[in-house]
Length: 258
Image (cartoon, rainbow, N blue to C red; front, side, top):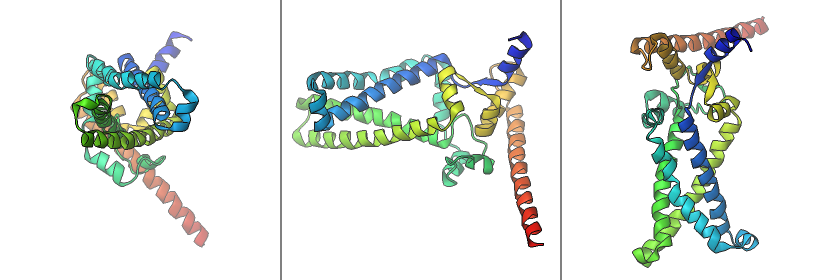
């Protein structure tokens, strides 16, 4: 590939996740899948009999459970990871509109011309749920593994919460994987760290505007005025496209009436 072509390819791509963020995601995903698999073996008698080695499976489950928060804690040494953690922790009116109008459906957010940032409301809720669930599972799992710490009633409650929350986590993970399988660019972004600029403008227009503002300012911080201008331009473009579609539909309807 020639140098001009390489430069053009770079301009068409945006860095979505740094190497540290991707490693944190992979390590957390691996530990989570091992926990789901070993938990299923421990909970379901048919699997437990077929797999065998229950004490070994229980130890793997225990160690992976205690190790689960480590990748996320290590990620705090990364500036980009901390910045994305702050993004995930902030909810805006756009996020509420996203949820109210069920914008998780394909093309729905674009139809509504929502200025979605780097993460949409569904991704923020998933991150909040998983972080809270990890803490609860670690606490209840500790009470189950060390029964002498509390009484019988507390251990029974811990077991109940642990089992049902594990089921909820399983469903959330399945949903997360399903959405990922239906978004090729999102998978590429998590695997390589880069996405196309066009995908960012379609799916996360406010974030694409922020990155464009950073590129124009020439430093690592976005120009607030440029971000606002780019967001407005993106919103007007989406709204204009929607108006044109509605206009064509009305024109076709009138033609049929004639």
